Image 1 (tube, helix red, strand yellow):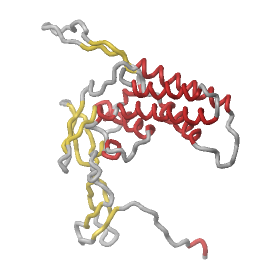
Image 2 (cartoon, one colour):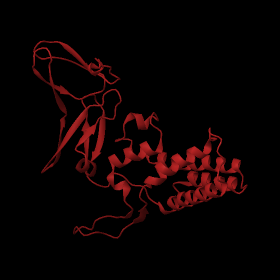
Image 3 (tube, rainbow, N blue to C red):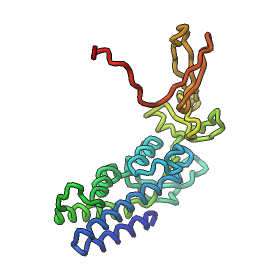
Image 4 (cartoon, rainbow, N blue to C red):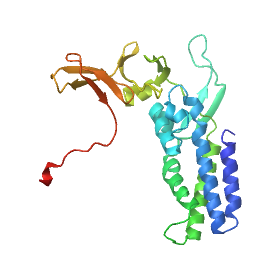
Length: 261
C-alpha cells in the first residue's frame, strides 16, 4: 500500500483514542496530523521537475501549501480517475490493458480545515477552556476513517500522463510544465529560488512556445519606458536612457500622512 505509513499513524491514533481521555485525544490528533503530512509528502517526488525549491527543500512544508502547489502543476489531481494502461496494436487500435487502477482526488478539506483543527487540539487552550471530549472524539474518529478510506482507495498515483513542455531557463534550470496547467495559468515560474524568472506559455499548432515575461517601468527621472525581465526579488536594473539604478524589492514602506495636517 502506497500510504502504509499514513495508515500506521491512523492506527496509533485509534489506540490513543481508546483511552477516552484528554491526553489520548491530543496524542491522537498529533498522529492524524502526521498521517496527513505523510500523504502530502508522498506526492513530492512525482513533481520534482515542476515544484519550486521552497516546496522541494522543505521551506514550505505545510500540507495545504503543498496541495496548492500540486494542483497548480496538475489540475487533474483534484479529480478521481480510473486508469488503464497498455500497448497499442500494430493497426493503431488499443491493446489489452496491462495496468488498471484508480486515483482518488486529493481531499482539500482534509489537507486544510481538518489539519488546522487537529493542530488546535494538540495544544492546550490558553484561555483555559475545557475540551468537549465527546465532540472531539467524534471529530477525530471521522477524520481517521476518512484518512484510512483515502489511503485504501488510492491504488495509483500518477503524473505526466498528458502532454507537457520542457523548459530550459536562462539560469540553466530545466523544468516541466503540463499543458493542462498551462491552460489554467499560462505563466510559469522557474523553480530555482535564486532565479524565479517568469515565462509566458503561448500555444501553437506544434505545441507551445515559451517567452520570458517582461514588465514595463517608467523611469521617474527621464520618463523613459524600460522593459524589465522578471526575476527573483530583489531585482536590480538600470534605466536604458539615463542609466539611473533601481531596485524592485519587498518590504514595508512608510509614507508621510498629509491628512494629519
